[in-house]
Image (cartoon, rainbow, N blue to C red; front, side, top):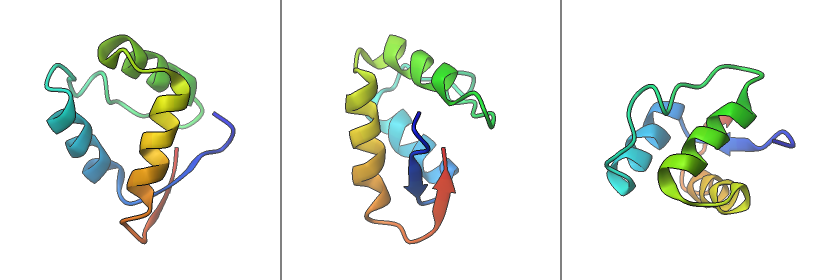
Length: 71
């Protein structure tokens, strides 16, 4: 995932994803270090978005929160 650095807490981002895509479950949003591609794959399947679209969304959300989270 080319070391995308997210700003904001993962829990906050999960909440925003769940609001935007009501069909996402906690299992879909399970993050494990080193398995970023698996997370993106699950999100792609459920949202219909491309990896690039998802990365852009994460980057846009990171602007509003000063705390860094590496995804």
